[in-house]
Image 1 (cartoon, rainbow, N blue to C red):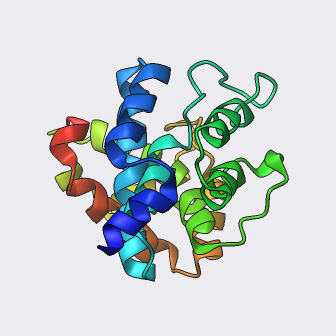
Image 2 (image 1 turned 120 degrees about the horizontal axis):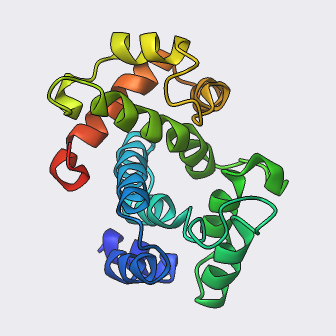
Length: 195
């Protein structure tokens, strides 16, 4: 019953969110990133006592317009959020998605918004670490290897390490604990990520 209320309150359910995502995003790697962020958001929702359906939808759709609008100048994430607002997605979810872009000016004033910011860059980094492991699996990823790769500025250079650290801080969790928590969440969907 509570999950049903969460679906209603989100303005759309997970299946509808996936359909929207597939209309907007064709790149399989971007889709995998969004699946990873969804899994991490669901895990943090359970951890913080949030509605995992709502939090998952935020993770799944936060970069909805990234393929069409890959930068602030092109309108990311504002174009996608406008579309979601027109679909009736509640403002709380839209604000959480806007907050993942520091330049949006929208404060991360909810646990959901802080979690999204906290997991977004980290999910991308964890996938990059998995891809350089001998078996190319998330099962091989551990905190020590992630921390070592974070020091290597040439590795996955597009991932903002400061945002990873800041994200853990905003969540109020130790960085190593955060890395382990998100890694475990992604390991739970490893087949969907091809890892």
